[in-house]
Amino acid sequence: MQPRRLTRQVTIGDSRVGFVKIGGGLPNRDGTPTTPAPVSVQTMTSGYTHEIDKCVAEIHKLASAGAQIVRVAVPEKKDTDALKHIIPQVNVPIVADVHFHFQRALEAVESGVHKIRLNPGNINDRQQVIDVIQACKARKLPIRVGVNEGSIIERKDKQKRQKELGAVFSDHKHGYLLAIMIAKLEEYLDIFYEQDFHDIVISAKSMDASLVIDAYTEISKRFDHPLHLGVTHAGPKETGTIRSVVALGGLLINGIGDTVRISYANDPIYEVQDGLELLYCLGLKERIGVDLIACPTCGRIQVDLFTLIQDVRKALAEKVTVPMKVAVMGCIVNGPGEAEGADVAVFAGDRRGIIYVQGEKVANVPEEEILGRLLTECLQFQDKVKKGEAKLGEKKVEIMPPDPLGNLGSGWEKMAAERIKTGEKPIGLTVGATR
Ligand code: SF4
Image 1 (cartoon, helix red, strand yellow):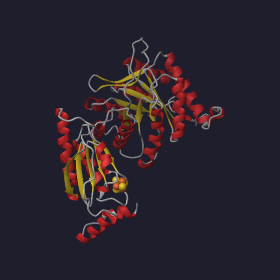
Image 2 (cartoon, rainbow, N blue to C red):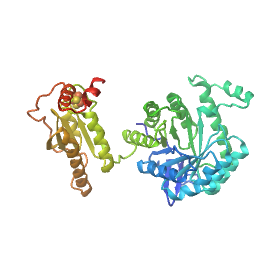
Image 3 (tube, rainbow, N blue to C red):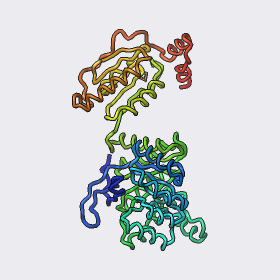
Image 4 (tube, protein in one colour):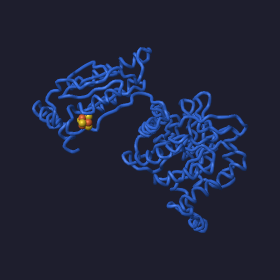
């Protein structure tokens, strides 16, 4: 990990919803020193903003999942009007996402929004931009300048379009797109600087992960504003997660990025979960809840691990808040090793689960009792941690595989055969056979 890039600091929020700082490390313009704020996770609601109750419920859901900032779309006046009713009911800073109509930004400011996002690709009338800047300045609200690959190329003025397309970022594989992104940003930010406005966050998104990495890297060399990282139009969750994580992870490893939004076509609650997991994995945020380790399964598997791991994940997500490490392993090959590194662990042997807490064997139960017993052990361990009677990550003894292990071997086949014998649905066979 490279050290975090130092930036100016932007603060978003109010005394009621709380303040979230973005970036930092460079002094404020009045000379006050700042320290870099932890990288924050944000997302955007998927419903209509003017459906006030639903919008409030969605914001609550996203905030509960860990979103520190939530953005809402405001395409119509009824959306900015709705903000007056939404903002007093929520507990996270709200950003108005403004495109095409600068009036929406002015209305959102009047409605008490905490930050504005402007797109230079579709709000570029100089006086309109100045009006928004002045409105935000009067209320001390930050503005995110978000250039997007999809809306950056001039579409109305053919001459301007030709000129822009001729601008090539020399010796760079992304050529004109990167050049246009940087040029638009420079041109746009000049208006902000002329107005002595510096509460700026920058984003430069594309659906191409490598362009995102290049664009943010170039921007980080040219501007000292904090950066909102994101990949746009990333596709469905399955591929969008990878696009986002590759780009954002690469940038964060290089110390670039101050707030992140993972985005794809699915419930935004997953965007929040994935954003948090990305930061946890890179050690940029202290984990809340369980760090779940599971084996990928193979032909040695001794229990239906696919079902078990999902049940464990769901149960622990609802009940465990301390960052304990829990390992769920399909057999003894890696079971003891992983169990040693975990606070609570189970590894399987012949349709049974052997459960350990910090290296001490506490149970050996049949498959159908694994979930319940593991959950009990996790909750008891959590209580001890909270009371100061146990410490996370403290291993007490070396784990040896139990003896005898029973009849191990081709696990999926054995499970499927037993299930068929007892009339159970042969989940193991179906899943195992298609792997
Ligand atoms: S722990 Fe066992 S079942 Fe799981 S992947 Fe490793 S060898 Fe296979």
